[in-house]
Length: 605
Image (cartoon, rainbow, N blue to C red):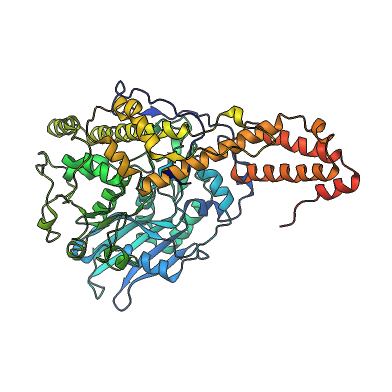
């Protein structure tokens, strides 16, 4: 049966390179990357036309200060810039998610992040511009459509002058961008200044951010903030997977204070250390979009672990919902904890002991302790039974009845264990684990890429005077047949039930999201090839055989094609659109003057 889904890829898929001959931590210096035609390799001319606060809005929706009042509880005290809009429901979500649960006992400064649903379908005046910059971003770094991220810097210190005995306040950055490392670094600069100098420095920070260039993929950006200068590079979807385009110091960098090697990656090894015997099973659960809950002692550990789980299937985009920090006050609490139906496809990070009871019917539970790198190797080898999970005080481990499809990879476990024993640097352990997940995901996804690329009609079937041909449907049995000779066994040493894993994956939200994206890209590629074929035709000669009515109809259709190409930014060869404009103009000039006047008028919206 054909799977009808909307998503992605135009060109024939390339064979994977042999990854074994490269060092696990291969990091290439930032280099001038040549982006394909039509991408943001050059300075974007539209940046010159940005209005006040547009640059700020391309990075952040707003900045909030959340305080604790004995009578009101948590409350949003300040929103910057003052014109920023948040619904009451969004403010309530931010209030509850910006403070750790009382049982966490977070004294001092704590940083974590959360993710919540956008309350209303708010349209940005920057919509078109942001879509343009988003186009070159890797799947995992594309701007969120229906959710916001909240990046929190929470301070709790003893203060006898307050009735409660404690000063409790959070500075929160609200953004659509999943740049977790970058925004946490930004908060480390902003928050201490704010707690010392209060609101005037927030206003100054907002003004600094509104002078930044927009976060366009592929560019190395120098970003001044409150007397400090951060230098970062925004990754692109054209970067080679598994490498970091490190920003190198330049001669003019005397004013640069901080150079960030990544804007979004968390330390995978540190996050998975409490359960690293089960990393391969966790990869399968995330790949298949299974319902997962992470029970942790603090929001920092819960949010980092959830983000690590989501990133372990990179470069595949995780398409289900995930909440790095989730509380009993969340608007989706009832929806996600009901027992009247199966748990939804979502990854939750929780800290409240109440969840140990509320979510005990969930099929897969990860319990982690304090993330302090131990000198000895973790000993929780066995997967634990769910009935053994009574409270949040249960021992760290993975509680599930899930039977993995693939045989356990003992080599990666031995390699990581050896690293712990030899006190290998955490960065090296992280690089080894990140590379392992990348190779595993690539081995799994390449057969799908190869099959989907074969659904593309041949270029010779594209005629300029007929509608572009349609993609062939995705037929599951046909795909399964390709696995016999061109399956993951070509690139992975792992044995097991790969066929069963694919069958399960094809029913998951991750497949649906991936295929929608591929189908969209391939359809756009067909439209682009059709447009290029039209531009190669001799339209002057063709219109001589047609009536004026038919010629006018042709002009209108060509104009529609042109506006579609501009709106969807079709991947056409350089010069194609200007050639099409010249063709349209030449055809119009061949018509009588009265028709020329009508066709030259801009369309009324």
